[in-house]
Amino acid sequence: MKIDLNQVEEAAKDLYIRALKLLPPDIKTGFQRLDAAETDATGKSVLGTMIRNITVAEANDNLLCQDTGIPIYNVVIGANIEVDGYQLKQAIGRGCARATKEHPLRSSVVHPVTRINEHTSCGRSVPVINIDFSPDREVLSIEMIPKGSGSENNSFLKMAIPADGIDAVKTFVIDCVLDAGGKTCPPTIVGVGVGGTADLCVHLSKVAATRPLGSACEDPEGAKLERELSAVVNDLGVGAQGLGGDSTAFAVHVETAATHITMNPVAVNMQCHSARRAKATFTPAGVAYGF
Amino acid sequence: MAHYEFDMPITEAQVRALRVNDTVTLNGTLFGIRDATQIHMFDRGRKTKFDLRGHAVIHTAPNVKWVGETQGAPTGYAPVCVGTTTSARMERFTRPLMEQYGVRIVIGKGGLFAASQEAFTALGGAYLAIIGGAAALETTWIESIEDVDLDDLNPESLWKFRIRGFGPLLVAMDSHGGNLYTKVTEKARSRREQVLAAIGVGGK
Image 1 (cartoon, rainbow over the protein chains, first blue to last red):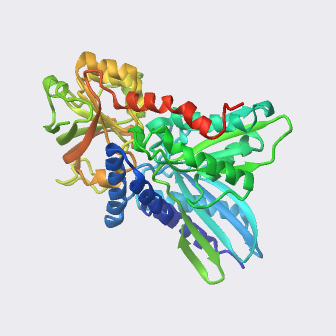
Image 2: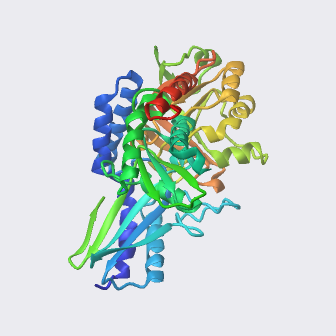
């Protein structure tokens, strides 16, 4: 199957806008679950406002949150797909810039030293484009994630040592949630990377933070750890917006990778309650949009 | 827990009446301010043409649309989506905003720290918590963008919004030392050991 780059550009544009406006169904369900369990009056009221905001955004065809984030595109290329990889990345960049100009959206992207904003949501190495491969025949998917800064500014890496064991991982996650407090726009999805190299560990934490609610880590050890942490994280009482209550996090998600005999790295990346993502799937039948 | 309706600007006595857990709804004028705005105002010596005395500032950088100058959009900008950012990064600007410009209210999300709390107490001010991420709703409380200054910093310009029924917002830090975030944080930290024990840490 040959991929039409014009379709990729259109999809990159549409996905950015779609992600900013429509919250995925699993996150909506997550809100209902937290709202039903919330015992704190302030927490209940904060969740109520967040849920109302989802309805207002849909009714007014508006963005859920003003933070258009750093645009991230995750591309998965299946078997028997014909596409020029360099041109694919260029097309995604063009689509991202067009969304910003044509909607219009606030460009939240600046040069790290000069702080100059090109008003395209693009810059050096941005949008972030991650490319992976799958054995599925004749399928190419593009997932778009506008990653907000309130949550991204609360990203942490600890190069723990083997002697510290799994306790170091658990303690680090709990301490990161406490340190982040209300700054991450809780309830969050707490993404945890365990193992790998430093950069892989941080990447895994981002994958974990942006995974759909209800999904589980493919590694049984990671799945066990995320169940354990998810069961207690809301006992901390940080609460929605850091104002107290039972809704600190929708869940803790864990992703793992093999690591070195001398290493025990752990990374935490959080996703805010506006846990936005959108997906386009290219098949011989055409382009389908979802989450 | 009282509710207040404020027509901005307000007096010191009005802001000193506020106590944590009260709620406030604002009407009239609201100024939008952000990291770059304040870095330029307080570190690089730039001044604004606006009179901020007695006013509220909100930590924001909005999504706007250029529509051309009309009566409804005197600056040529129409609001698209206006929401609130994390306040913590702007902690060191609270005192100069109050001392040099007479600001009475800071609106944001996630809370501020000790230096801001001291400024609120000494000079008469308060921090109102808005729900971060609820920007579509917040936008419905904004009537228009009345004026803009320091617009070379766009989107981190100094925005003058015309607002109606902006709230209810929660008083989270007051001028009497009241601070909801400190209370929540202390309680959360006191639960740390118990939570860690529940997942088998520290049992050896």
